[in-house]
Amino acid sequence: MAVPGTHPEPLRRDPAHAVIAGVCAGLAPRLGVDPLVLRIAFVAASAAGGIGLLLYVVCWALLPVGEGEPAGLLVAGSRLPRRESTMVAAGIVLLLIAVLLLLRTWGLWLSDVVVWPFLLAAAGGALIWRQSQRSEVMETPPAERARPGGGAVPRRTLRLARPSFAGAGLGTTLVLGGGLVFLWLTGALTAARDVVLAVFVVVVAIGVILTPWWLRLVRGLTEEREERIRTQERAELAAHLHDSVLQTLALMQKRADDPREVAALARRQERELRAWLNGGRSGEPRRTLAGALEAVVAEVEDDHGVPVEVVAVGDCPLDEPMEALVAAAREAVLNAVKFASRAPISVYAEVDGDRVEVFVRDRGPGFDLAAVPADRRGLRESVVGRMDRHGGQAHVHTRPGAGTEVELVLPR
Amino acid sequence: MKARPGFDPGSLVSGVIIIVLGLLLLADRTGIVDLRFDYWWPAALAAVGGVLLACGLAGPPSGRR
Image (cartoon, each protein chain N blue to C red):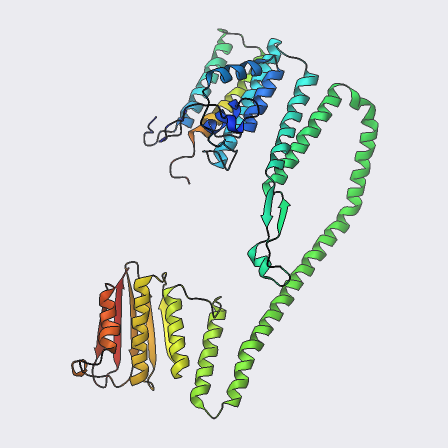
C-alpha cells in the first residue's frame, strides 16, 4: 500500500547495506521500518519450521538488485514519520507472533524452550547492537568552548544519544528476560527460587528503610540548588547595577557643571537599563527595524547630546529597503536636532502587515517648505529621494511656528 | 493510488479486518465453522497487527505535519 499522493518505489534488494543478501535492507525503506525489525522477523520465522529461511531465499531469487540507495532507519532514514514507523514495526511484531502461534498449533515447532527465549534474546541483542552503532562523536559546543577554561580546540567525545539509553536498556531487558524464560522453562529456576525470594525480601526491606532518607536527601538537594540559583541571580543583578548605574551616577557627580553632558549620560544609562529590562543586550548588532532605529537614535544622542524618544510598535527584519528607511529616519532626526534641539524630538515607528511607517516629530520653529533653497539636498535627497528610490514615500508636514513632522512610508 | 479527499486507507483496512473478524465470530456462533481456541489468539493478534500495519503504512492524516 502506498502513501497517498506518492508513487510506490519498486521492491529491490540493497546489497550496500546487506547482512546476507540485502533483502531486509531493501524491503525496510518500502515498509518504512528499520531493517532490524525485518531481520528479527525472518530469523524468528526460520526458527519455527524454517519458513523464514524459505521466504528469504524466495525474496533473494525474485527481487532485483537495487542501486545502493541508503537503507531506511527506524526514524531518521525512513520515509514515514516516527509515529507511523512505530505502528508499522508493532504491526509486524504482532503478525510475527500470530504466525508463530499458528505454526505452534500446527506442530511446525521446535520447542517452547528454544523458540521463545531465542526470539527474546535475538530481539534484545539486535537492539543493543544497533544502539552501539548509533554512538555519536560529539564536539564540545561553541558556547562551552567560549567559557574560561573551555579551550579553543574542539574537544571530541564519544557518547550515546539520549534515545540510545532507552533502546539499550530495552535490549538488555529482553536478553535477560530471554535467559530467565529459558531457565524457567527448563526448571533451572526452581532450585534458585528460595534464594531469589530471600533477596527480594531483603531488597524490599532496605527500600522501606532508605526511602525516607533518600526523599529527604533529594528535597535538600533541590532546596540547595534553588538557593544557589537565587544567590547567583542576586550577584548578577548587583554586578550589573555596579557596572552601569553606580558608575554613571559617579560620572554625573563629576560632570555636574555640564548639564548637557549630564543629560547625555542619563539618557545613555536610561537606554541601557531599558534594553536590559526588556531582555536585550546592549552592544549587540541590530538586525531588526526597531533595533536599528534605536541604534541610530542613540548614536545621534551621543553625538549631539540631545534626547530623542523612540517608540516602536511591531518589528520586522532589517532588509535593504528597511535600511534605507532607517537611514532616511536618521537624516530626519539629524535635521530636527540641528534646527529644533531645544524642543522635544520623538520617533514613532509602526509595522503593519503590508507597510511600515516612521514619524519623526519635533516641536521646533518649523519652516516654509517652499522656501528651502534648491542647493540644500539633505531633506530632498537623503530623505525624500532615498525613499523614492526604494519604493517608499516621504512627506514633510511643517509650517512656521508649528513644528515639523517627517512621515516615512515603505510598503513591505 | 490517488487519494480522494477524506479517504483514509488505514481506516478502510481496519474496517475490513474488523468485519472479517465479526463474520468469523458469527459463523462460529451459528455453527457454520468450528473455530478452536488455539486459533483465536493468532487471529486476534493478526487482526491488531494488520490494523497497525495498515494505519502505519497509510501515513499521517492529511494536515498533520
